[in-house]
Length: 65
Ligand SMILES: [Zn+2]
Image 1 (cartoon, rainbow, N blue to C red):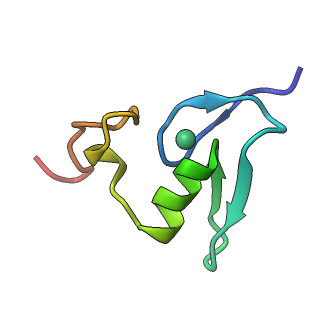
Image 2: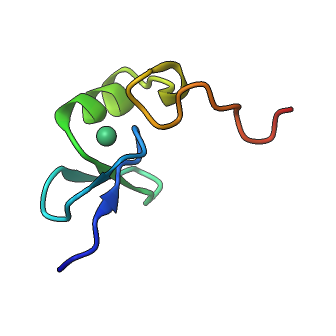
């Protein structure tokens, strides 16, 4: 069984073979579980900490506090 992947936007695990992988210009790989996460991350450049449905909701930004 392939290991589940972790969504780069919402932080939830999802089965390998589903979702999508996006390669940014700088070579960073983004694993995205759904088109919702893909749009939120790539099109709207949203901050996942501001969305209740992500695991990062309410988390402090790294390096602050
Ligand atoms: Zn996701």
